[in-house]
Amino acid sequence: MGIGGGVVEHGDALTRAGQSRDDQGLLRVLCHEFRTPVASVQALARALTKPSTALSTDQRVEAARLIADHAEHLSAMLDAVGAVAEHLPKATTDPRRTVIRLVELMSGAAHAAGLPQLDVDVAPLVEAVTIDGPTVRRIVTNLLENARQHGAEPIRLHADQHARALRIVVVDSGPGMPADVAALAFRQNTTAPDGPHGLGLWIVTQLVAMLDGTVRTERNDPTGTRVEVVLPLPR
Image 1 (tube, rainbow, N blue to C red):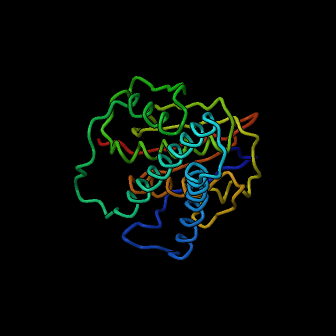
Image 2: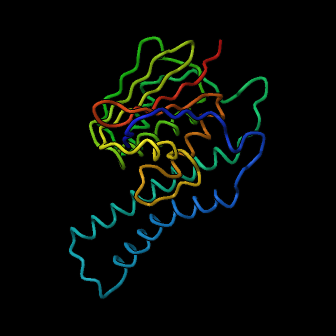
């Protein structure tokens, strides 16, 4: 997940106040993002159940592991889509906000993204913060998944306090991509199968906007991308 240069900021939610700018485009994105893992699960299941398929014991174990990985990924995607779909304009109080230990939340997100050994750096000021834990975890998980799939390790995850807000930064070591591609990376109608973006990044913009935050992407010299999420904290 690398950007060749430039900065892109995102703060508007397509779902804010129940409005959708392009329902057909969203459905195309959903179909595209779900089609590949579903097709892979179907092929693996046929290979495991077809009597004529001569799979070794090791191959069967690997096929079963891949099916489990796909199922976990699909489940996470459905959870994130559901969080966006169920969003309503905020009331004066947000019952989802609770005191969360950020190291535990980020460690869980890293494990869900397939990066269980990821180093997590949390500044002392934000070790425990009052936030919408489930939504923030989905944001971090989606960013880490994108960095793992389209960038390169090492990937760094950092959190601190910035202007009375929670700042979460994900930095990968990918090969980079042109600035014009980076400018489109978070859009819901960007569906290139070989691109460093997809439904996960579009979901990030929706979830961040639901929390009245912003997403900022910029080049991380000498290589890779720096993605910064800023979420307001209660006064």
